[in-house]
Structure formats: structure tokens, C-alpha cells
Image (tube, rainbow, N blue to C red; front, side, top):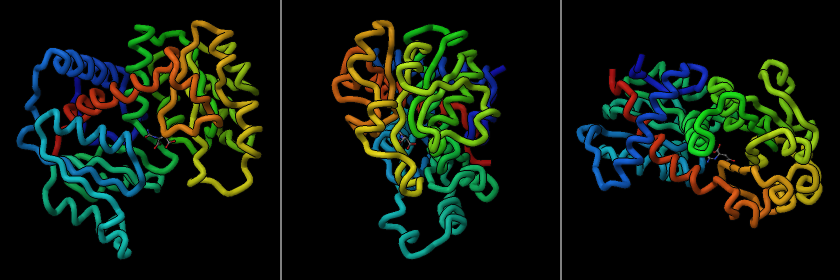
Length: 304
Ligand code: NCD
């Protein structure tokens, strides 16, 4: 059954059929786009893009997605707003909502902030990343990219390597990949592995070599320096040696694909030549991001 949703704050709230409906819409939008067919379904709608944290891909992708559906988009960023004068998240949300937008796409460094926002606004909330909690649109665009390669994720082995503990991308991806029937493996320095990992239903590998041996595709993550205390990892060189994806990895496993949500630190979690090789899905992830976000905006109910 296809449902419309009041908010999308977490993959945990989606069913497999919600996810499949979003993939179906995203593929349809992609096909129509390549045939020059324009969409107008959100023509009378106003979308506020409220980014309290830095972003290049997600912010522009949501903006372009809304514009491609005919919506009007207002972009808010905390620098240059009253947040810089000390205004609280609560007041900022209530102020934006008092202008009656239909959707608020929100990124904030507080885990749980998107769910918090749903309690105080009439607009639909779309979580564009809340602290280290979740990043649903990233997981959906990653899954669509994988489905373009494999058709089904049932029984596929997908590895995630790097800063797992601070990563909303890892949390959302684990939930969605498992919902779609994939086996998930994680790998990273002990200091960057969550202490509650036993509840995640994933398997672990000690080094990237082992992870690559086990997996069909490996996704590298950026070290989230902005979310960690100093001293959780050694030097970049040492990190690369045990957890970085290098040319020899893709040379020794010709079927391997690599992914990264971006932004990338070349020579740390992934080398430049690997990220820009034909085995990299990184640009496809970015392109799919727009179509997935069009689909996510389309399944929202809008103002209550
Ligand atoms: C990720 C994020 O912001 O969580 N980036 C993104 O949205 N493409 C990952 C990151 O910042 O490392």
C-alpha cells in the first residue's frame, strides 16, 4: 500500500513498501527528466530549506529537487540569521512555521532535532541530517544507486568503513540496507565503533582488506571531526593504511564498487584515483540524490 507521510525524520519509520514506492517515483522522475518532461506537482507549494549546519550536496540537491517539482524555495542558513544572535531552535522553527511553508527541510547538529521539530510545526519536516542520528535521504539515494547496479539487494553484502559512531549516514544506511535484505558489514578503528553495535544486526571486520574480501560494495565515510573529541584516531597516514580504500583494493577485486556520501578527504578514507575511477559510484550517488529528494517531497502530506 502506498502511503503519504506527514514527516520523514528516520528510516526506522519507513516500511519496505514506503522505500520501494520512493524508488519507483525517483526512477520515474529520472526517466521523465531525461525525456525533457517537466513536473509541476508542487507548483503552489513553498519549501523552506533550513540548514543549521554546513552542506553542499544535500542543500543544493533538495533545492533543485523542489524547483524541479515546481515548488518555490526559500533557503535559510544559520549564519546570517537570528540564530547568530542567539535565537533558539524552538523560536526559529516557530517563526519559520508562522509563515506557513508547506515543507521544512532541516539539517541540525542536534541528534533528534528533526523529530523535535515535528512537535512544534504544521509543515511537513524532512530530516536532511540530525547530528549523528539519521540522514534518510542519503540512505535512500545510496540504495537507489546500489539498485541500479544489482537490481535487488537481497543477500548482497555491503560494507561501511570509517567513523561509524559519529555517522548519521551509517545509521540510516544500516537500517535501510537491512530492510531491503542486504547483509551489512562495518569496519573502523575501535574508537569509532559504537558501543551498542551488537543491537545493529551487522557483522564486523577488523581491516578494510577483510571488509573488501567479504563485500560486493564498500562505502567509505569521512571522519566527523566536528562531532568528536581530539585523540580518537592517529595520523591520517596510519588511518589510510588500515581503513583507506586504495587502488590495489579495486585492482584485486574487479567486481567491487566503491561509494562515499561526500565530502571526501582524499588520501585518508579513499584515494583520489579510486574515487574518480569507473568503479566509483560517487557521482551517480549525487545525481540520484535529486531524484530521490523529488520522490521524498512528493510523498509528503504537507501542512496539516
Ligand atoms: C554527509 C553528512 O552531512 O552527514 N554528507 C552528505 O550529506 N552528503 C556525510 C559527511 O558530512 O561526512
